[in-house]
Length: 145
Image 1 (cartoon, one colour):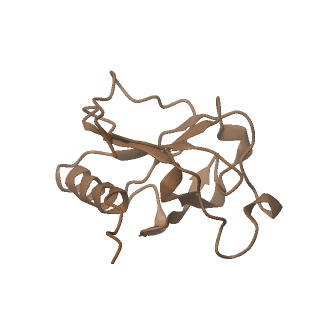
Image 2: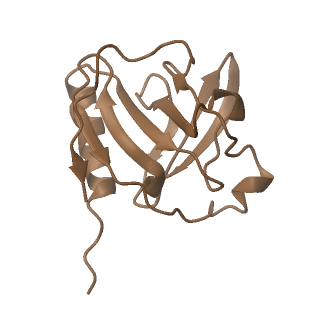
């Protein structure tokens, strides 16, 4: 029997840790053709997303994907991020978190992500999913294989 990957469990654990401590959990995502995010908020092939309970609706932190609704500039967007594309999760307030290796991701289970709002070629940070809310200081990250 093949061992399950640790990455989705660590993402869920750090999300819970941030929430329990009153911190805002952010994920950094390397955007690819299987990532569905607003293209206008992608910068250098990455996007940073606020995944706090206050910034998301219907948040699913699954083993293969992270999916939720959030608002960008007042417009509700459906977000789909393969767990394989997550390069870090951290607390915005302290920078404490963890980095991960990025692996090739699987297509969106509901169809081809490229037919939807999908990966573009630039990326941005989204605070309460606003691009002008950069995290303070420098995150402390540990790479997990």
